[in-house]
Length: 103
Ligand SMILES: [Zn+2]
Image (cartoon, rainbow, N blue to C red):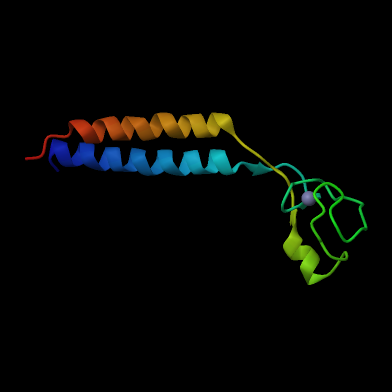
């Protein structure tokens, strides 16, 4: 394997890993399992009304299909450390790619 090819594969792996880490960090992890309005993210836990008290969106009765489509379960929190590591790894790959000399 030539040096340029090895560096190219390494840079590709860094780009891929960095991208995946960045995406995971931005997406975040599930912080709880409560019910939230899909439009305004107001917590609907324990609220029996058929519309969101915050934004007025019709969220349907509890247990119906309309309700399941109008709400989301769980709040996500971003993971800045993971996203930052992703950016650093990705930029390492990007810099390597820029300096590869093709044979
Ligand atoms: Zn709402």
